[in-house]
Length: 428
Image 1 (cartoon, rainbow, N blue to C red):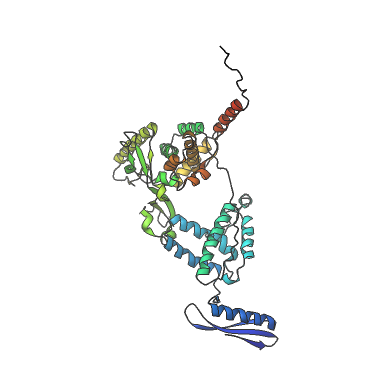
Image 2: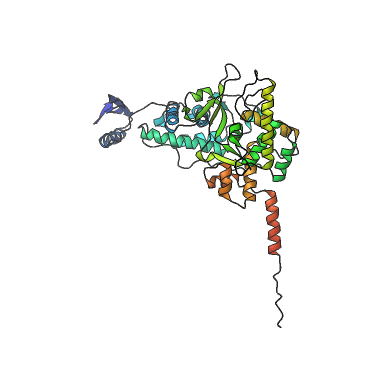
């Protein structure tokens, strides 16, 4: 039951409810008019009778999300990068703006206001939950629609659980999500891929790029290869290499939160007191585990590379620290993804004649070229790229190369303007 009491010039509604621990609690709510108090009284009595009463809570958005995050990580066995990216969204894009608000006072217009604010916010304004001073140039690069979409998805998923947990009656997250930013990725034509590979003198970079172009690999997959993944006798001597691991550098705090089942190895720290760890983990999805067929040129390069590793270890076996990886530094330590990216950037600085692309653009370039030469055999290319679905492959990597458009234009011209053959055989 709920009771109305006049207190001075206002009216109070008093009622008793049981909290989440089963303890009886008294609650007073004040209203300026009797009509409002009566309306609230009826609402409370109806909710108590039907079991839909919302237990009053002062939990904030920050408190809820930081409680939700590790629970979801444990439940869904998130990989380290998944946990890390979700933590970054919460710490840098949600808590600084609505973190102190109480969950039960949050309304859809607050979420819409958050999206509006984020759309004008520079990238990297907050890192690790701390605000940074950005240069005028840095302030011009604002968050993308895709990032806003990721914030929306996180809020949507987490607030549905807030309803399930009895913190909210319904989610305040708007139905319509911010639109993703659609951006054409820069890729290379086949002539550029071939010429670039020919110009790379750094043996580590050359092999990393060659592997990436042949197998449309992710950089973590390239770094995650071991000599045991190489089989020169497979496929009737054609040779194959197997993708079933990925190398990443992650925060040590993250490793303490995630399930260790997907982590195959944690490499020793190079520097004392490092806050990050280099790890070897299972590939992104089950579809990411795949076997790639070698080309003759790659097969020969891999043979020479393995011989090189033996020579380097023999030079100073006592100081050589064999990491067990395919890509190694002369001292035996693993070549991690960030070093591959740095080497690629250094090469690009020295070769401005090539269109500027990110290292991951090599994967895009390879996938696009393979789609083209296969005549659009999506399933065959999917087997090489390791995409979980054919739709993902088509939507993400089916770039149109300029050479294909030129060829299409020629075919159109020859067919469209061709005059029909009106000649007919002469009667005999």
